[in-house]
Amino acid sequence: MEGITDLEIYHFNPYPFVLEPTSIRAMLKCGSSKLEFGELVFDCRNKLLCLSNGEKCIRVEFVPDSVHDNKYYYLDRDGVIRAVETRRKGYKVLRRLGENVAATVEIDGIHMHRISGIDPWKDTLAKIRAAKIRRGNIVLDTCMGLGYTAIASVMQGARHVVTVEIDEEIIWIAERNPWSRMLADKRITIIHGDVTKVIHLFEDESFDRIIHDPPRFGGSTGDLYGTPLYKQFFRVLKPGGVLYHYLGEPGRYRGINLYQSVKRRLLDIGFESVRWVEEAKGVVARKPVL
Image 1 (cartoon, helix red, strand yellow):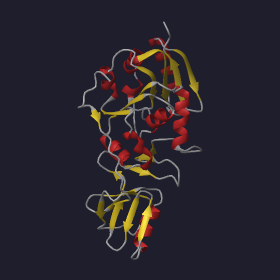
Image 2 (spheres, rainbow, N blue to C red):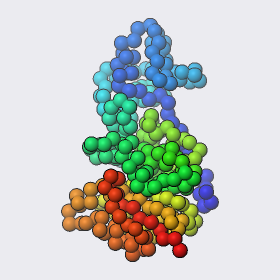
Image 3 (cartoon, helix red, strand yellow):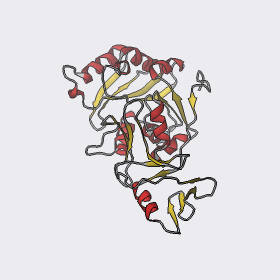
Image 4 (cartoon, rainbow, N blue to C red):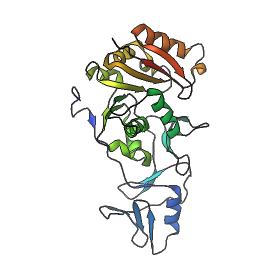
């Protein structure tokens, strides 16, 4: 898209050597045979973990004898199997929720997705339905995270998705998340940056849909719930375009009616048909057709 330079675009590179806890336990018991883990093959005799197409192998130097079922692991380039987690900017871990269930990220004990009575992928699909993603849409996904809303938008038929992520550690985790690999799709453009600044690079009426799924409201995230950003959303949306804004549980903020506050701001800016969508725990608003 115009206004976005190569310097701002992040080229997503999924890391293939990702392991489930059951795979690691099987490696510890392995004798002289070979084990297959999806797209990976472990040569027990030579201690090599290889892509099944034979293009790349890494010698396994260290296998932990204790692993947790609620984590994903990866084989780093030094041959050490480690949990997919970071500790530099607060503890972040790729949380495994079960077999055939999309993972989430836990950040200092707080999950990135809803997991009570719902799984992260179903949570994502509820947001996509609320945003009314249609075939051929151009979508702005403001807070990428693990990229599920960007991926689901493309699967729903979006022509192009621009997704923004400020946290390089979250991008690093996403590259090691088996459920995020479709972020490498050419229909998805990832921008590593602050959406409150990046938004100014887009031309007027650039997007059919905006999915705004920010971290929970707080002192460090207030700008993501502010009138200046909402004005930019209004500017870059096409007439008739839809904004979906995740809020979570508005009643949990002591002394603040978050839903009413957001609704009032959106109406003041010019949005119409502002309403609460319980299934998606968020607000939907429409830019009028002039």
